[in-house]
Image (cartoon, rainbow, N blue to C red; front, side, top):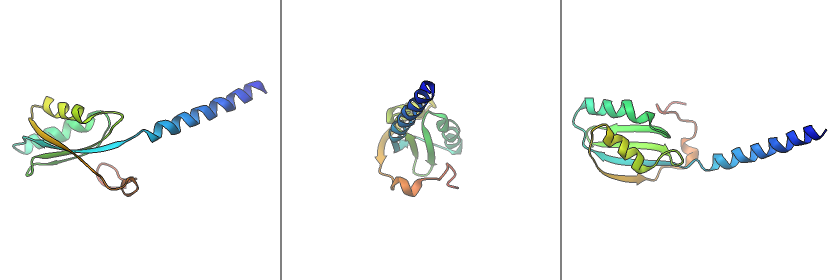
Length: 115
């Protein structure tokens, strides 16, 4: 009986801990101005940046020379993503945090925009 009560208490504590952790998943979207020259540059960014910690979405616009990255704030930082882009050999000339639509409007979407 004591073991069962102990098991119940531990289960409740773990449940509460996971709920608290889930609330800390802040998602940020940052638009970086990047010195991109060609389709190969674009492909290099698209191939490597999605593997950075916390990256949820990536949009590279060659014409505007921008890289829009959506990532979890508890897994990475604006500076961390910038360093990852620069590590690929590109100069980042600026960045701007973008206010995204409400989380409810974007829930359930994957990287390719499909459900």
